Length: 539
Image (spheres, rainbow, N blue to C red):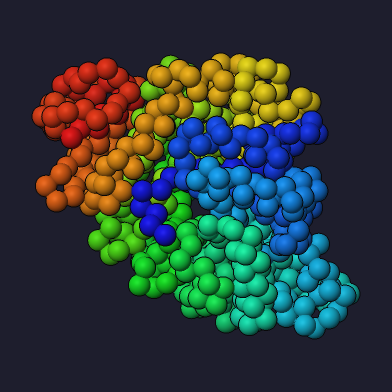
């Protein structure tokens, strides 16, 4: 499938739409909003997991890959969702969490009962109860190993203690995972997203990391490319749209993951551009975004992937990230301008754009004031870690307000009705107060809304081949206020100019000199300079 002109919409089902009044989003809620998504113009829906799960990590701890968690609905609901989306020209992509399973999965339960076959499905190491095999740290905090006393073994969990890492060195594990893909492919899916898939290949020997948290030993590991080739070929998904979430990855590896000649994945998510506001590289330490660093990262990845035949998934937001408008824009004084500028900044890049639910409405961070309002396991863990390390409650709440994954998980803001029109009862997590003004009902029929700006961006990608297939080159490299690049295809050229500041900014030449006709922007007309958070696309 050609995917260069496609746009993907990510749904986090638990927070999208509650159809049965239990406070949680569900599959029938998604079905009820398909016409909204058709109006937006997206081609594919990527849904995060709704498989059977204890929900310790909101579904990324899968207990059964072939069964639907009753909280979300039934298999017949899923089959109806696939069919109804297909009627509207929208394909479904499901999220496959293959680095680890829930410890409630049958495989793990049989492992801890001592069945050697299933012990070998995971990464167990013998050892004393007071000495983990390595000093590696879990990405959710604490040591990455958990002791099972009656087995006298430790198991690896790079994430939550209830998420045990699978042993991809075991061919039986790989065969199980291929069968799961075949099962869902037969249901009519158009693609798959693979969670932290570049972490699946662990080292031959497990040793302490004297320089970090252990990730250098398992990120983009020694067999990861051959494992992916095998998975894709043997499950028959090579012609489908596939995207890999790549944790702490490298450009060279992502070129290999996504170059069509390698037959691994269609595209890759990388996250380096979403760390430019990490003080000293630490997620839980705040600083303003370094726009100069952001520009360099975009240029490196966009131009590097383009030159070598790789393909990016381009995005700002997802279920693991704070809202971009609160992070890189001004969600108070320049709310609409910021939302539109950030949208255009990536939708004109080379790659497949992903829209995260509510992003097309300009949804913001939650701005919670109490730890009791948070639900995310990572946020709750790090709140306690921050307090233990000397932060005050006020400081910890401020940091969570900027960094918590819950910022991206608040209910979709459908209307100004109670609970944002998401549910008839109090949701599992409360919406921001601004749902009364920022919501779909207020935007879908407003031609100047953020929603309709996104509609225009999607339509332009399909209308102009230069957006889908053109080359890219970044310009204005020394201007740390502006992200600017050119797209070219034959003798055609587009120039995209984005001001990331809340004040007027001048470029090396008049904005009017970059091109003739203005294709799209978030201000009327064209001035010699860029206005606050302005985007101007010139051709």
